Length: 471
Image (spheres, rainbow, N blue to C red):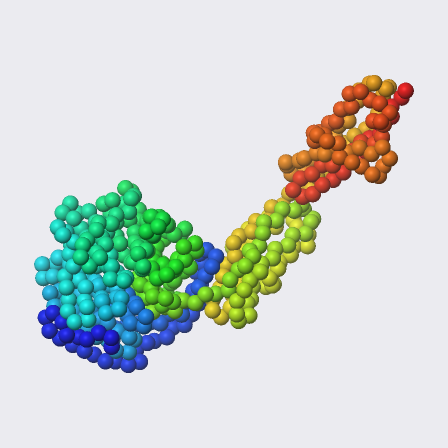
């Protein structure tokens, strides 16, 4: 193990147990967004956690967490997956380690008066870390010697804080000045959540260069939390309309589900590189810790594009991807798989009105799957000319008007054309209405007039009306 076990209050009991990782492999099946990751879930229980356990923080291959050996007794621990060491603050009735970095662990403990205090552990001893004047405090994350956490003030409001080793700085989201939690930090970037005036919880990312960005999961009812950050990946959870809790990965653009395949209410709490940790509830409501390996699935280089065609025309959707091993495809229409549509392209030979809707493709390989952006097929009624220009005769210097009538899905556009000797027509500049007028007919105006009517389904040229100019 990395950490010695001597510390404030004496030596904690050491327990060594090998082979405790129970592998439960499986791809995440819920969907949200486009670029997804496969998740290989390793059930990770502290061996004496008969009443439940969780994994709360990770650095490299070392992780910390909490376990309960009775209905009320809660202990911290540190582990490399084989050896588990109890990690209890000697001043605490319960101990809750939350994150680690290098030789330091941070978390919280509850004293005999039921007051919660923050702590950091340097591998040898515990040090209490309380925000000055706070009624309760927790230390939640550490990066490069900087600690973030949350404290409760005398009025009962919650605030985030940043501790640089010598001084505390309060840290509140602009829209949550009285209800802000700072949960994770990595190289100066901080994640957490805040509550607005309506008590809805919103996740946030704070970047020293760009400030606060508020983020809500698209499937959340009114509760989204960022738990931890590592590089460009964030883990967290949201609460759905049915009150179920779901974990996710977030890369700054896309949410990826992180739900335990055989559990409920998944709660990711930490991440380091490609390893995410947390806990989920079993069918009997027992908490079980997990370590999840996340790996990139197929990458979509070019998503399918929107298509607009007329009834009876063809429509084609195509996707280009990158990834190994070999990628397989499944196209979907309005959320349902299309039977036999398992190639990189999907074509409809003769489009009907019923084909209008939303199309996407799921690209999969053994590492995971990626869902493309949605492409919309719009089906329109093609143009039909119902009344073509009629031939006319006029004396030189007289006036004449040609007109056209057409139907079809709008908008319709018109372009009049002229040919002195058909079939070679040229566009008449500015002639873009349903009629065209010749005010001062001369010999040069004699010839054939027609109009090209266009909509999203294509263009149709009308029959021609001939103009004869008498001298």
